[in-house]
Image (cartoon, rainbow over all chains, first blue to last red; front, side, top):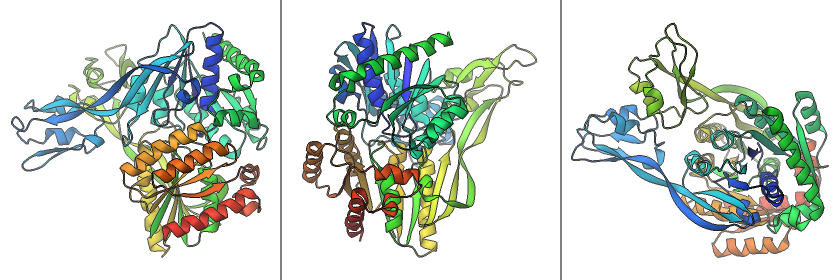
Length: 284
Length: 296
């Protein structure tokens, strides 16, 4: 079972839900894997404190031009949609940071002058976190494109385990990359106007890509009632709620899991897990 | 003309609430919402849209089933796993190839290599952008289509329109609300800014993400300052953040106390400085004084 945890708005509690669920599922004796796909700002490691056993650099293929072989025909520049390669009068210029790694230029080059080199986009780190497998991506600072690194993290998915994916915030390409292929999508939100607005976008995204989904309301009790109204009229499944409790925020600030610092919350995450499992079972 | 860009690294630290208050406090400016992926500033500023334009971001491939010879070349050359043999039947075959528009990167490699010229390459509208009036002045904002790409391009467009609008109206400041993270939309929002203000919070996550976002602004040579929001949530971590920022030569321009008035103001569609004079409102006023001193 692969469950992705996402949210339109940032800071609503994705990592809290993903990391606490991972701990409780693994403590129930089930093989578990937590994958941090929020590669721009990965935070799960702060809470689950994994021992990292391996680290691998991920590359996106970018063109390397052999000037000896290049005939300056310009085919490479014509196929490139990203302005990453330009053919001048006497040389070909490559802008590796603009390259999407589509391979078009070396596939079209009639002289065989272009070969794929590599641009470092970040690292995939793997390890163990007190009873469960842990994988995270860390985007290289300065790198703009996170989807190739997210793809590399997801290659490590071990389907023999219950897999939890912590996705980046938002609704655009990095999020799609992180959540697609999951069995179920958990959207974490908060009952504020910003939370509601961004949840609508996230629900639209889930519907657009056809992913079964449900909502966890975090900081329940703040804001207003419009979020629940929306979920009611739109038929959005509310999977569970986490109350607004300053002690949770304080534990979070220290980098502690709520289920460790506040044992009374264990039952709530266990119930959430059971609800998600029921929903996934209904899908089969 | 100067541009102040507010970003956060970590999401949900209060970026937009602080920008909304700056909107109320600053004079002679244009507002720009560069968080095109999950824009929220309009919820407080209630813009009246004056101009509305489609955002044509690039192209996507589409297979014409009648021309598809089902040779599989397109799927073979696609690096983005966007093509599969699950398209509609044609007159000759039961299934053709199909491009998934969400996974399509718009690279055109399949178009180029299709031996029967069966793949079309079409403009795609992946959002909208707007020029609006608000009670605090003009605003440029956008809405990226659901599951769309090219948010960086849309951010650049919003920033350019905001700057043009400021110049045309003789306004000397643009205040931009940026996106979380350190990727494409963030990079697009900080290039050339007069000042990048990073809003963080005193949590281990906030501290970790602040370090990464400051490394990013340094990489691009952008002048950076920090504000610690909800500073009393964990005073120990707040002090650590201050010490680390100081050691890196990044000034801390403000500390904003946790205040439930921030959420109530949001519910009322107001910025916190408009809604009352509580701790957060006082702290943000002070922050704005320091930020404007840093800008000019």
